[in-house]
Length: 143
Image (cartoon, rainbow, N blue to C red; front, side):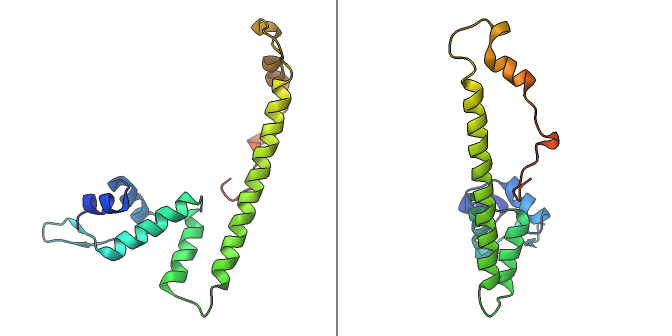
C-alpha cells in the first residue's frame, strides 16, 4: 500500500508517518519500481501501536523501548512493567503540577470578586507581582 493508504488505515497523516520514520520509530518501507513507498500490514500494526502510545502521552524514548520489547522479546515483561510504572509516576507528577496550578489560579481569582477597572484589578496586579521559577521547572519526563 502507498503512504496515503497507510495514513487512512492508521487514521493519521502522511506527514505523521514520515515523522515517525525520521525518528526511527517506524521502519522505512520498501520501494516500488516507480520509487513510491510500499507499506504492508506490519507497518499498519506498528503505526497504530505508536499512535496508541502517544495517546497515552508516552515519549519517543519510551515508545522505542516498548518497540524493542516487541522486536527482541525478553523472557518476561519485567522491563515493560518497569517502563509503565515509571510512566505512571510521570503522570502522577503531572497531576500534582496541575493541582498546584489550579490552586494558584484559584488564589489569583480570589483577588478580584467584583467588577473593577483594570488598573485596580487584583488579578492583573497579582499576575504582575507573582514570582515564578526560572524556566518553569517541571518534574515530568516531558519537560
